[in-house]
Length: 315
Image (cartoon, rainbow, N blue to C red; front, side):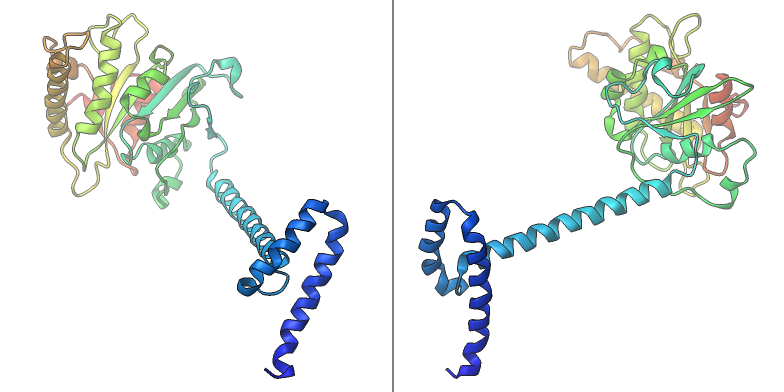
């Protein structure tokens, strides 16, 4: 081996030795002793001053990892701030307390409207559409891009001087968690969003859980009079899609699914006997309408007034 080939190793050894010698006075004697014992063992694998080389590599890797985390956090924070286009929209990080009292919110409200249904059914897009001011042209010129929600979204409607809180619940909760987490007595209006292009079974699970929850409290239907049960609307969303099913067909499929679920409950030995309920009559008392991103007037009418939309009275 020539002198020119030995020079790089010698320079590296001198640098690493200088680092070790500068740190040795600050290290406990047992650590210094361990370093001197380990270096000869690792030298054939790592090179001279192996302990300094290994420690330095780990330190550089840790610093790089921290910088990467900071960059990712900054990027996600910027994306979140860009997504807040509507100042009336807030986000509720609480999972088990999704419906706090009016005193706990930043804005007083007169009632609560709840959007629920399976994932990817269009609830969040409908939520942003409803929170746009009435008559806004923004919804006609561009489509709001959304992703699967992992927590609830909160917005406000202001019809005729009153203030209504609009809650968009994440679909991954499932119907059972929705009924457990959300006190339905504090909800005045409830919209079950059904994807018109997909099978209705997942949406029927939501509707069944909601109806059985209200019926168990003594109401004969979902649209109970004189009690605290919420008024319910079935919104057949994505109605402008080429593969969208007719609302009447969706209603028939929902009825069949409700009957099937009630029989499963009865066979499973549930506390209630659902098989004797007139699910067709109950479903006939629930208004059903078609909706889309470009036409959410029927859903807006129900959310603001609590009355069945005019478009649903022909179904």
